[in-house]
Image (cartoon, rainbow, N blue to C red):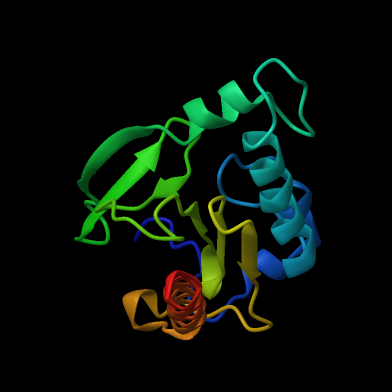
Length: 161
């Protein structure tokens, strides 16, 4: 993470058109929040399709395999535990019941975050208009995700009451 720095001091490299056009696996997907949320919505739709039926992006069995826990360990760069699926998506580190139990997604550079909740039928993408390299102190996306989770749990409790 430190060498080379993904967001070097004094430079906004991710806003460079040449970098956006380069093929850098897991590092430079570019899109609007609406575009990326739609991608997650398509994955959720594919997950809910009957087995054997072609999906928007993949068959439901392929999506299920991508969301199956594959690695569960402490992230050596960030210093806290993560769980990742076979498709590279971050999964819930500690599974629990509820509408967000099947949450999957990615954090992105500069404070963005992109997640799907298949059980709730919700896809979320937050793309800030200012990329910041402040690491774990960046609470913009986390605050939005926590608010959505709280709302989902409140709706879930109201539905069962």
